Structure formats: structure tokens, C-alpha cells
Image (tube, rainbow, N blue to C red; front, top):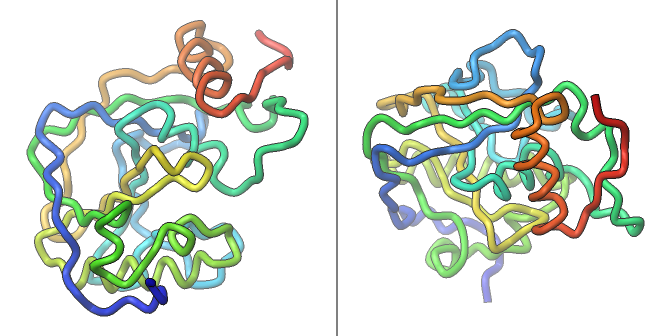
Length: 214
């Protein structure tokens, strides 16, 4: 049984092929491009830190994406919360957010940090799908995995509220993955955005939206 003390082994590598469409949920008025990397990972123990932001400057900045809308919703909307007993999606989760679609321009390799791949590293899903109280530890572990897996441009990991889905955190050091923004949809203001995100909340998470629409 895994003890969740990373054993310093290199992770298994997976190829994400050129042409893959990746999804990202971000602030609609954030003032930064949807394919931009955050150059400044937060300090450890910062209350707003993410689960896998790199902690070593050698890895550069970071960008969270997913290969499905469900993965993007799990990580971009639901990652820091428990699913409410009411099964209602709240407007505040969606207000002033957009869904971006990004095309990967070149093949990249990522470290597999989910499913059967975790046993090789002495980790398990309960550790990787922790709530925010465990994020400093998961950040340190993911950073160590990347430092020991020099061909990786990021890690693929299980989504906290949908363990059958995975998401990616990509790093800007080494060879930064090149991403082209192909479409951006405001989640509430655009009919297509509502269809994709509200439909996913309903089908994948059992969360119905009954709030106001434009």
C-alpha cells in the first residue's frame, strides 16, 4: 500500500499529441491571454495556491488545462469545494468566467500522476485529490516528480471532484508547450458557453443551474 512519501522515481511519460484540443476556465476580465503561463507560482501555504503549482524556479511558471470540458469544469470551477447537498450550481461560480479552447501545436510529454501510474511513485489518488489543506504537500511532490522526470513538460493528474477525469498542469521551463487559442466563450453570456458548461455540470456532476441568465 502506498505511503504517499514520494520515492524519487521518474514518472511514466505520456504523449499529448499535436492538435489536441485543451480546455481552460479563467476569468473573463482577467487581463491575460488564455494561453499564457502564470509566471509567478504562489508561495507555499498561500491560501489561494493551486494543487500542483511548481515550487522550484527551475520549472518556471504554470498553466492548468484539461482535455475535456468535464475536466476543465472539475478543476476550473469545482476544485476547492464539496458538491453541495442541494445539487444546485451557484451563479457566483460562473459569473465573469469564460471557457477557452486551445490547440496544442506540438507533441509534448507529461508525467502520469494518476491511476495505476501512481503506485510506481508510492502515491495514491487520496493524496493527489486532497482538499486545499494538502496543497503545499502536493505542490512539493509534483515539483519533485518533474525534477526527476526531465522529459516532462507537465503532469497529468486526477480531478478532485471527478476522479475518472484528468487535468494537466503545464510548465513554462524546458520547452514551453505552444498553444493556440481557437475559441473563447463567456460561460453565462454566450449560448454555446452555457450549453457546454451548464450541460456538463448537469450530466457529469449532477448539478443543476437555476440562476439568472443574461
